[in-house]
Amino acid sequence: MNERITVGRLYSGPTSPSLIHRANKSAELSSTGEKPFAQMLEDNLLKLSNHALKRLEQRGIKLKSEQMEQIGTALDKAAAKGAKESLILMQDMAFIVNVKNRTVVTAMDSESMKDNVFTQIDSAVIIP
Image 1 (cartoon, helix red, strand yellow):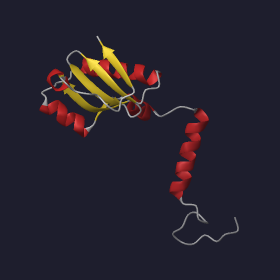
Image 2 (spheres, rainbow, N blue to C red):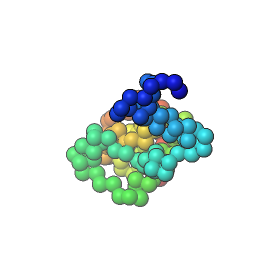
Image 3 (cartoon, rainbow, N blue to C red):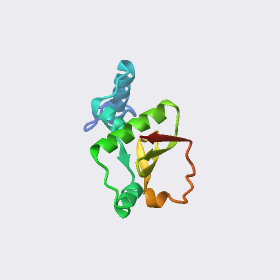
C-alpha cells in the first residue's frame, strides 16, 4: 500500500472498481451457493427463439399458458434424463427445444409434420 494515489483515482494499482465488484459478486454467489431470484426465474422460463415465433405466426399456432407450462414440464423431464435437443410432441403440434437454454427452436403444426424427418435431436417427449 505504498503506491501513490493520484487525483481522480480512488484505487491504486491496476485494479479497477468494476473488477472488485465482479469478484465480490462471484465470491458472494459461490459462498452461499444460491442464485439470485431473478436469475432463477430466468433459468426456469421457457423462451421462444425468433425462428420459433415466426413459425408459430406462419402456421397459426396459438399457445395458451397451460400449454407453455406443459412444454416446460416436458423440458424438465428431458433435462433430468440428460437431453440436449429434444422433440416435444403435444396434441397436433411438435416443438424442437434446446434443453440447456430452455428455448423453443422451432414449432410445427400437424400439416407441417407430415412426411417430415426430425434431425439433430437426442430425445423425444410426448405430452398426452
